[in-house]
Figure 1: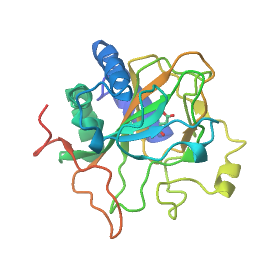
Figure 2 (figure 1 turned 60 degrees about the vertical axis):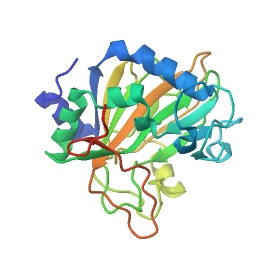
Figure 3 (figure 1 turned 30 degrees about the horizontal axis):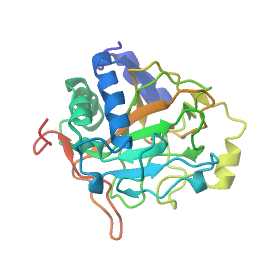
Figure 4 (figure 1 turned 90 degrees about the horizontal axis):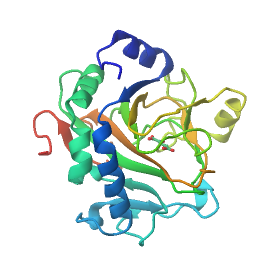
Amino acid sequence: MIEYNNQSLWDTFALHGFAVLGEVAPEKVEAMRQRIDQIMLGEANIDYDRTLMQLDSEDGEYASAGPQSQGHKGRTLNYRKIEQLEFDDVFLGYMQLPIFAEVARHVYGDIPVASFRAMFMNKPAGKGTKLPLHQDRWKALDRDPLLTIYTALDDMNEENGCVELIDGSHHRVLNRDHHSGYLTEEMAREFESTRRTPLILKAGEVAILHNWTVHGSGINGSPNPRRAFSVCLMDAETRNLPGGELASTSIIFGQGALPA
Ligand SMILES: O=C(O)CCC(=O)C(=O)O
């Protein structure tokens, strides 16, 4: 594993907008895989009413994925996205590992850090929804979250729809008008001939992503699920601009943090 304070890691992050941290806690990965499957199957002792759950699309198209809303939507492993995992002990315990506190401190300094979202992203076996190019930013926030910690729960590669990144695209915000950072069709066309870097990770490996790094992902052509846990961390002082909706305000590191 690369040390979190290794200068070359942070040089890579600054230059490319992402860097691979390596394996952080391989012994915790199977527990997260089992837990998320339990959650999808409706078997977990969690408050489903405050858990955002979205079903995968039937045809791979982003526009036809299910509604993103609170509550369980059926006993199936065909979920695309599940948020508010900071309220689950297994995921919170992982998010609060000391190494992630150090990573957050490197980005934000010594301030309380909250979760904007603690999210499961899934490409179910042989399925998945194409995720268009976007930056992870939200127009409704008074400041931008700048760090996502992305953990592969399964091996991920081009065949099973891994994240694809536009190297070095994190230096500016592209579409300030979109509520959640999606590129306009014209902007996306400009990237058509730009090489996308596949984020190839082994199960348990962690990548750190600058939130402005343009990225997307395809569908899963393999017979196995491609599961990931993606945690976007923000300055705990982040607030909504009028009319906005803050996904989460749970403090993860620093004073007032959720108890492990
Ligand atoms: O896992 C994926 O396919 C996309 C993840 C993503 O967009 C994110 O974590 O911000």
